[in-house]
Image 1 (cartoon, one colour):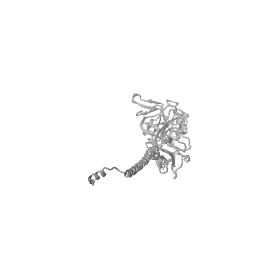
Image 2 (tube, rainbow, N blue to C red):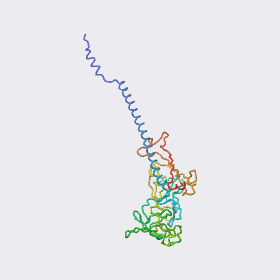
Image 3 (cartoon, rainbow, N blue to C red):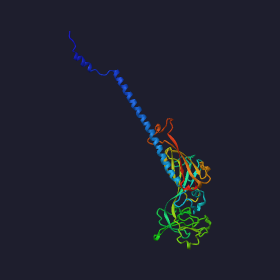
Image 4 (cartoon, rainbow, N blue to C red):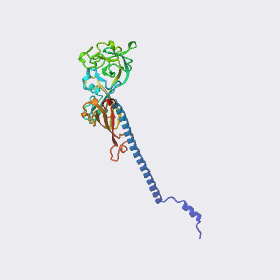
Length: 371
């Protein structure tokens, strides 16, 4: 009887494939590895999304408070002196708008009307129920008065660069500050001049008189009893129409008004807006409001104000004299927004979008004399 070759038998066993059970075990182990790797990937992506959203919240917070604080700190400022007597030369000088400008800032509660800005759902329109604030200041101050030795309608200056007919300017020294409208520019013979004639002039508001009046009295017109003169070179022979005068340095700067509010951004969310505001309409409502989006995801704002002599912050409706406000406490609410990330990646464990509320106190630099 023949015997099997042991070598042949061993080769036959070596050529056998995987059994079904072995294949199933391998697939199971592979699936476990893939599921575990996927879980780690998804977890890391969720952590990344949350971290990215928190980072965007912090960045929006930093930008919002940094830019808004700059305006608030400078409220009521001018290049001369915050203690200078402010007199409006404008026809509309007695209306609410220019009275507010003299106070440096004016706050609005959530239900207060914001002149010139519409409440609504359109892009740039204000969100009802959120606070707002108007901030007024005169910046630049790079134009110097060279001569104004009689209360005429012409200021001799060192240059008129960047100034146009119809601009609202402020001329000031340590004693007085006047807001007025430019009606004409002169630059003949190397002598630059800014005119502020009475009447409609070159703009829509106009000045109430040709001469600067240190006591607002538009009914006196030219050569009134309260004429004021800047940069009088020889006080011993001053023009008799200069009821008051000075030969101390005087400068001219552009009047700026900015408005901060929460508005709809047209992308289904809310943003913090800063608007440049101008009023040359001769009414209480500004006729030029140009909004600019500052930071997205800012859903709410409340502002409280501290007045000199008080130890408690108050809502805008309780402030009696805006010229005595020395600090503002701004509370902003930020919410995660859908950009590169959406859905659960901008949400917290409660399923709602990540959000945070932050407060910042800003002291008004130009009110330090009230402390």
